[in-house]
Image (cartoon, rainbow, N blue to C red; front, side):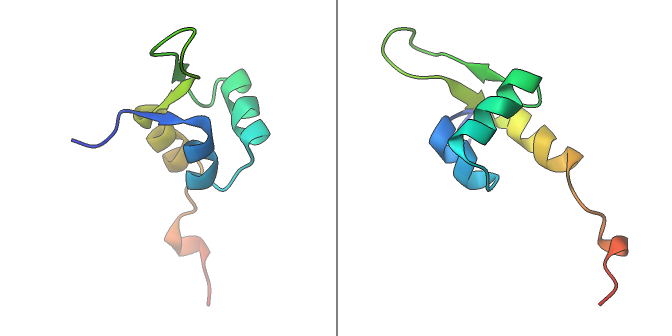
Length: 66
């Protein structure tokens, strides 16, 4: 089983956004986060919401005309 939760910096790298860009996506509700250890660790973004975000922004291959 893969990871279920990712740090903000990991998500930023995965989706080619800045950390502030990830926070903006969280604010708009395009990504979902949890704080697994309040007071100790930062927010974690769910793998499920990352997958849904990437699927939503996927470009169909039939749109490419080489």
